Every structure is written in structure tokens, then in C-alpha cells.
Length: 222
View 1 (cartoon, one colour):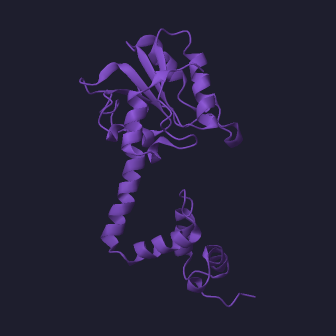
View 2 (cartoon, one colour):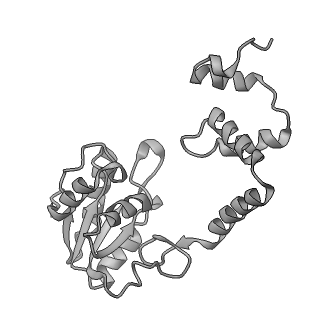
View 3 (cartoon, one colour):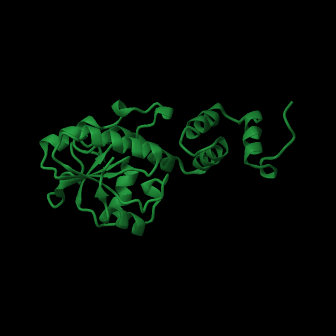
């Protein structure tokens, strides 16, 4: 029997339970909610709110939104050098002749790259790993862009590699693994200073902390 409750009279958990019992007025709305709820941090309650908002928008604006998402998915690819998302063969950072090509900063994902770029002080290149080693999540070294980093260290004029990874167990495990893989190269391996709190992702740190961590980086000792 369907419970006699109203979404605005219950908490978040009860609201989610409520939505499970309520039959939405259209299978198309239901399908849209299901897809929206697959996004990280989006529960069914928020998904329904977003879908109903899209339903109320002008049809042309909804079409523009959908076409932009499809165009992004089809047109964006990883940079052949650093794996930063780009529309061409290489990203705008790797193709910039004014960047310091002797220094490469290794980050977990593009959000960390953008966080470091926002401080405006680092002028080297990047390498996007695409994650960190996390056995609990089924992510191993083979799932990351490690081999291309080792190749870059051996074939390009790189003198320093900065490990700008999260101050977490997974980040430390990844840094230790990278140090072992890069041991045979002649590059100077450093790590950002721990002005970034243990367990905190770079993308959530403030600009002053990021700047200090990058400028005061230390030789990586594993």
C-alpha cells in the first residue's frame, strides 16, 4: 500500500523512499530521471527536480543542451601526450611553445590540473593519470596512464617530474608506485609540500595553499 506522505513534509531519505512508491506520469520522464540519477552526487530526488526543470524549458534550449552534451562526448579526446581533454591531437598546454617543457606535473585528473592552472604560477606541462591506485575500487596501475608517463620520462627533455597527488593512502600508494617505475630515468622526482591536508583532494584546496605546496615541493623519497 502506498504511504500517505508528501515529499516536502519528509527528510531526504524519506523523500527518496516516497519516489520509489510514486508512479511518475510518463515513462519518458522516468527514463530521464534514471539517466540523470547516474551522475555522481545526484540522487533521484535531485534528478527528478532537474528533469522537471528541463521539461519546463523551451524545446530549442533543451535540444541545444542535449546536442552540446553529444558533441562534447564525440568531439573531445585525450591529448596524445598528457591525456588532458582536447579537441585536437594535442591540448593547448602541450602545444604552447611558452610552457616549460623540462617540468611535468603529475595529477590525478583534469580537475586537479585546472586547480593548479588557476593559481597562475606553474608554467610547466602536465600528465593526467586518470585516477589513483585503489584496490578497494578495483583500480590498478594498468587502469592509469602510467606507461605513457614512463615513456615521456625516457624520450622527452624532462628534468623534473612533480607528483601532485592527493594526500591520501591511495595517493601515497600511487606516488610510491610511480617512483619505482621512474627510478631508471634521469628525472628529478619531487612531490608537492603537504600544505594540502591529508585526505584532501587538490581541487578543494584554496589557491594560496596550492601555490605554497607547489612552490615548496620537496624531493620525493618514497
